Image 1 (cartoon, one colour):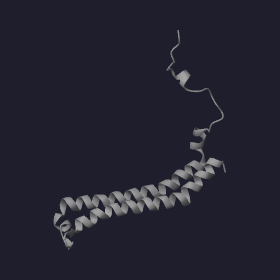
Image 2 (tube, one colour; image 1 turned 90 degrees about the horizontal axis):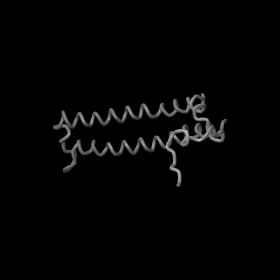
Image 3 (cartoon, helix red, strand yellow; image 1 turned 180 degrees about the vertical axis):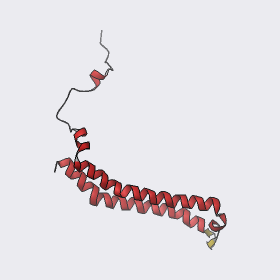
Image 4 (cartoon, one colour; image 1 turned 90 degrees about the vertical axis):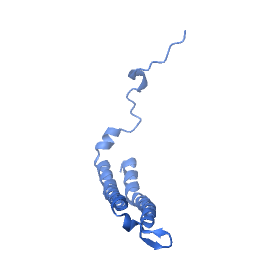
Length: 116
């Protein structure tokens, strides 16, 4: 009779294998802490700026419909232009983050990975 695979933790987690990275030590390292600080220097302001911009758009749509309905040209209104600019701001944040990561985050992550 074939035995069933055990689903206990003892069989699922390999014994202390020293061949892999020590993630706990990496997490505590000064290089990793600095990498997180570098990342947060971009992420927090960019998130706050975008949320502020988005909430401004929502508040204007809810409480200033007259302003949002002002025609700029033909059937194009202020509300439409502001709504479309949400897509533009998302693209700008994406490009900015990619550039920031390439210049600051990726080199720091590479140094951390290489142990320098």
